[in-house]
Length: 252
Image 1: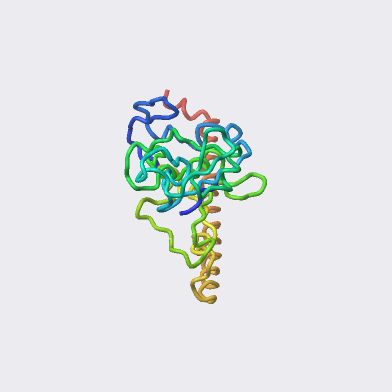
Image 2: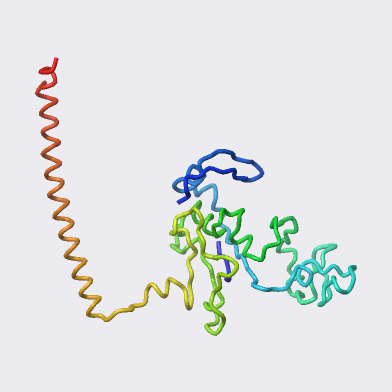
C-alpha cells in the first residue's frame, strides 16, 4: 500500500468493525501479534495508491460537477463526459474521463464531521493509525519476495526538493496509533527519515571509537552470559540430584 503526500493501552472501549460493534473487549486483544488473520487472507497481489491533496480542488471541480446547480455551486471548470454512462467529471479531467472504465469513484464515504484533518488516511476509523500501517501490521512489513516495504509515504520533497516540507498541522501522516512504530510508513526521498538515518553526523574517528566500544561491550556481555549459564547449569544439576535422590521422603 502506498500513501502519497503528505501499545495499545489497556483501556476498554467500543469499536465498530465492518458494521459490527465489539463491546467491552480489551483493546490489546484486537490486534495481537501479526493481526486478526494470516497474511495469506489479506494480501491480494494488488497495490493501492492513496493520493492526498492538501488544499486540492473540491469534489465539484473533480468528480461531481453539479452542472444543473446554480452558478455559485456548480463546477467552475465545466464538465466532461466519461466512458461511464451518466457520469461526468470536472472539465480539467479530460484524460481521466477517458479512463473512467478503469477506476471507481466512491461516493458513499462520509467522514462523520467537518474537521479539516487528514481523514481517511489517519482518523478515528483507523484508530489513529496510517491506513498503510494497518495493512503492514496485517500483511507484514516487507514483501516476502522483493523485500520492498508494504507501506510507504511519498511526500512532495521526494520528487521536488524545492517544495514545502511535510506539515503536521492537520495530523501526522506517519502515525501508527496503537500499533508498533515498526509499522510506520517508509518515507523515501529528500528529507525522509530513511535517508536522514543513513547519514553520518559525527567524525569518522568518533564512529570508529564507538564501534570499538560496542565490540568490547559485546564481548563482556557474552562473557557474562557464559558465567550466568554456567551457574544455571550447576543449579539445574543440583535440582535433578535432589529429585533423583529421594530427599522429599525426608519430610514425610
